[in-house]
Structure formats: structure tokens, C-alpha cells
Image (cartoon, rainbow, N blue to C red; front, side):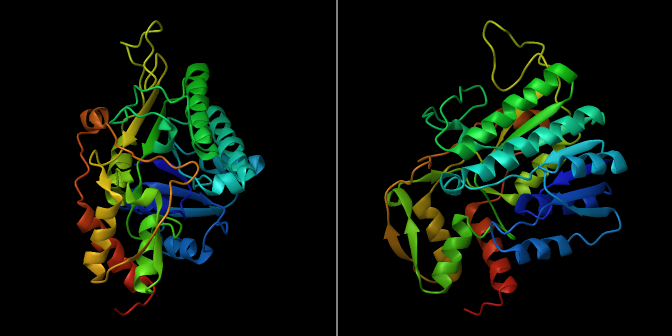
Length: 337
């Protein structure tokens, strides 16, 4: 069993992952600042689900270098999973400094701590948004990602570059995870499934961007967590076939690897909305709007290397995943249909 530090442990993916690691018997040290980007009570309630003698929670910011160093000094984690970040594409247009502080400064502090405290493996969250203006489908980690469409995406690409530098300089195995539209119970209130469900329950209209012509590789949170749990046991290794003359962006001569974690099955936004309507037994009032600045019209993950390396393929259907989220939503908020 390992000592595993999970940043963002009060977050959506972080809380699910922490619970899974505790079930496996690991000692989990959770870090989160429980900020008010969305309802802090939801974050506190997620933490209540982690009531376990092997779980230690530390409320702090990644930008607080002294606090991060003290945590690493005291607990000496063997594996670090960095899921804490300022999330949201559209919010990055309103508050860019929040993204630099959390996603760049904070990640630098994590990298430095991993360097000085000899961490065995760093896993960190990237995002499908790094593919930006790329129109080659499905998105592959072999693709160029030099044209991000939002500052959020730019910070996530920066994280990958920073991680590679530390893998090269200090031999730290780093694994980046490009998540594709994660959804499920305990999800973020600013994400589409939560917003749509809340609006339809209240008979309010929903905003449907790009006039409904969006495609997303929706990935259920349990499939994400299963993938991460398996990857904790597979630290990144140098790619012996890597060529400086024809460099593969997703691997390296250093112990560095990037994976897509998606469902490999893009879904039309209108079909996703229909799955919500099916479960709720109500038809949404739709407010059709143009594509928003920073948004990508379609995401679609090539996940062949993930399947090959961890022998797992996400398998939760959209209707099953939506049903589970709505069951949780109705219970958590005490909604009677």
C-alpha cells in the first residue's frame, strides 16, 4: 500500500478518486483550498464521504509554498496525484489571474516538492482542451497542441511542458491525463449535466451552445477513477523508440507520458440532453446560442495507448451515467418530481 497525496481532494474527480484509493487500503493525504468558485458546501459534503482513518485532510492553497513543503516533509508521499486546478474554460476569460496562480504557480510548487522529496510518480490532470484548434479526429497524444483556444487550455499545456522538464532534469516519472468531459454524481455545478438537470427540474430554459451542434466525448467519473487507479501502479518510463528527429509529443526519452482519458465515443449534445429528458420525464426548454469564445465544437479521444497499457476501456453508457447522476442530484437536493 502507498502513501498517496491527492490535491483537489474536495473536488469532483479528486473526491471520487480518494474514496477509491482508501477502499484499496492506501493512506491518502488530501489537499484542497475549498474555495468559492462554486458552492463550498458541496465540497465539504464530498469530504464527509471520505471519513476514514487512513485519510488526512489539509486545507491549503497550492500557491502556498511553505504549506506544500511542510506537507511533503511531514507525510513523505510516494505518489502524488495533482487534480487541483482552477477549472472552467469560460471563466478563464473573466479571471485569468486565478489560472496563472493555481495552474502555473501552484503546479510549480508541486513539481519542486516532488523533486526535493523524491516522489516515485507524479500523475497530474491535463485536459482535452489542449487540442484547441486541432481538427484531426480522434484527438491523439501524437498530435501537435500548439494552438490553444483559452487561457485554461494554455495553462494545461504548460503543465505538460513543465512536467517534461522535471522528468528530463530530475528523472521524476510524470504522467499527464487529458480528461474528456467528465460527468457523474457529485459533479461540478458549472458543468452542463448539472446545469441542464437543475434547469429542467425547475422548468427553466437551458442554454444550448453552437445551436446544439456540439460533440463531446463524455466520460463517466467511475471510468476516469478506474483508469487513474490503474495508472498509479504504472509510473511513466522512457520510450526506447522515441526519436529526436521525429519527436512523439506524448512520450519521451525521459520518464514522461501523456494519456487521453475519454470514452472514445463522441455524443451529440442534443442526444445528451435527450438522455436527461428521458430520465426526468420532462422536455427541456431550449435557448439556442452561438459557439462561445474558447469552446471547442467537438472532442473525440484516441485512447489506444491507455487501453494497451492498463487493459481497461471505459464502458458506462451515456444513459446509465446520466441516470446515476440524476438519482444522486434528486436525493442530494431533496427534489421530488
